[in-house]
Image (cartoon, rainbow, N blue to C red; front, side, top):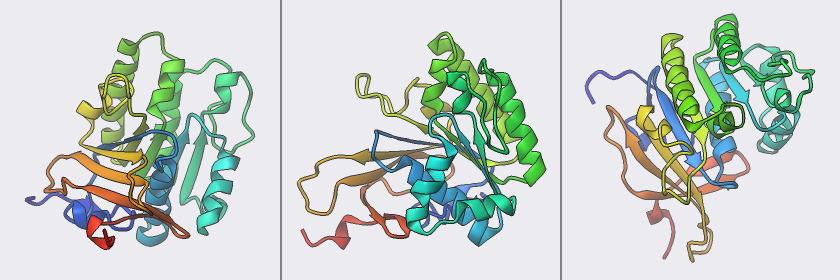
Length: 248
C-alpha cells in the first residue's frame, strides 16, 4: 500500500502474504501457545536479518536462558554464537535476574530486583552500540511477574512500543494467547498497540502433516492474506505454506 517501506521478514513463505515484508520501524505481535513456534519464528526473523540483509538484531529473553536458545537454534544450522561474536546479533539476558542471580552473558540485566525501566535503558544502549535494526522481546507475558497489576503492564507495553519506534527498529513482541478470554495477547493491550498481529497455533487439525498454523490477524498499511496457513518446521526453520500445497 502506498510508499510504505518494508523489510523482508526472513520467514519462508510469509513475505508474499504481506506485500513483500513487514512495514519498517513498526512493532508487531506474534502470539501463540507453547509449542506453536514463536521462538523459531522470532529467531529466524533476526538470524536472516543479520545473515541476508545486514541488519543487526537484538533478542531480549525474559524467559529462556541464552545457552538453551543457542542450542535449540543450532538444529537449524544457525550459528548464533558466530553472529554474536561479529556483533550482528545480541542476546540480552533478562531471564536470570528474576530468580535473583547474576548472568554470565556479555549482555544482561543483572539487577537482583528486576527493573523494567533499566531493561528499556539497556535495550536502547545495546541498540545504539550494535546499530540494531530488528528486535525481539520474548516474552511480554513475563512482564506480569514483575509488575503489580495489569494496568502497570499495559502502561509498560505502551512505553516499550513508543521507545522502540523512537530508536528506529522493526520489533516483534512475543506473547501468549489467552484461552479464557479469547484475547490474542496476555493483557489485551498488545494487540491494539501493535501494527500487526500474527497468531501461531499448535492443534490437532485432523489432517496428516498439519499441526501448526499461522493467521495474520492484522497488518496495518498492508494488504495481507486472511487465510489460515499451515506451518512446517523444516531442517532450515519455519516455512509458511498454503493449504493448496496439501493433497486433501
